[in-house]
Length: 431
Image 1: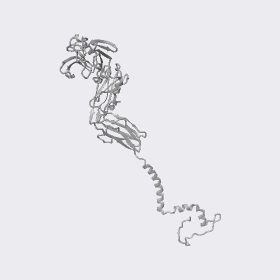
Image 2: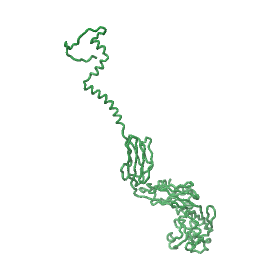
Image 3: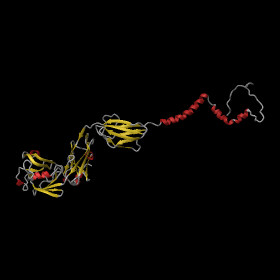
Image 4: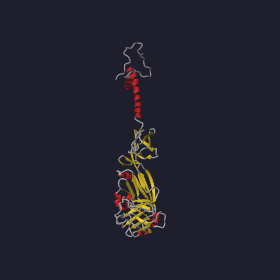
């Protein structure tokens, strides 16, 4: 590769360089020698002179821009995290049957808080990459929620939504009453205001626990009643807690529960009374010891008394009893029956009786199916058996009827599930 030509013009005398002798002690240089000496640098000079000044400037700019462009491209690839909330921010009638989800693109989530205007919060968990958070439960209906999400490298993201209210609802009324004390036979009974078709979902939303601990199982009687009991009577002094988590549980198509509460009640002493209608007596045992024996009168042969294990479910110092309410026409109507305690839904009571001769009790079965004890009109004579037994009793006490000539009462007729074996009781659970 030759050196670039400087000019094509012939040299004039004035322009021609003077040729002088070399000074002593210095080497003699010639043009050819100069070129030979700098031959290694020629290619570089040639490359530098390949373009005009604009090309050179562009080349320098390209080199500088190329370095800045790579850094800029790397900087452009660093994106700000984008947070998305479902239900979307501002939703007014959000679904309450699905969990809340928070996701992030181009980043990771560091924290998520979902709080309702009712004071509740929704727990949840992140996926392995912390790009998604999902609530462990669904939001409640008719509630305003605020979602506060934090993603690394981004500002805090806040979204709000309001869940819609359910169209139809149901409630579970429970027995016994909150903070009450009952006998050892009292089951926990929940009666629903609407028929339940998804029994498993509803039963899972209700728990009954006992202290001291014992296994407690639910049993369905039809589609509107769910009772809970242990294998044997409750231990005296037991504390029972009923936890209802029915809010937004779909008991039937489009019908949702509304309750979320805990209630407690207690078991008192153990009292079990055994009525032997062959002997026409009732023996009362309290905590394993005989408390009293009373003469009684049971159902006559044409109106026999149910046999089996029954639980006192209602108590009245005085009440009216009409035969028409139990399908017996106009056979009786007594306005002031003393010391009446209900044993079945169908109308069996154990009660005081002032209208029959005192001689009847202990000697004959003459009633329309109830168990009667001698009593006085006005329910204020503390000396008679009717008064004494009533005063010694409480809701949930057990009354066992034997030798009545009648079959065993249905478990659903009153709070009388103790007539089912433990295996049969557990078979009535939906879970």
